[in-house]
Image 1 (tube, rainbow, N blue to C red):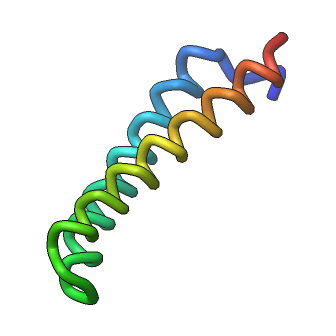
Image 2: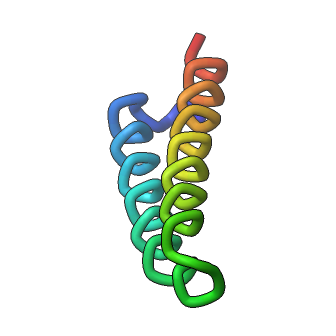
Length: 61
């Protein structure tokens, strides 16, 4: 997006990732055992941030 500053986009992605993490941490333990649920939530959070960061870097360069 040429009209959006990369720093603002990074902040929005960070907030979206944090919200995703909170939702996963609260929902996954309800449907599976706690240990694997927390591990899956953290892995999904890391993958989300990595993929989003890659896409932003690809768009701005």
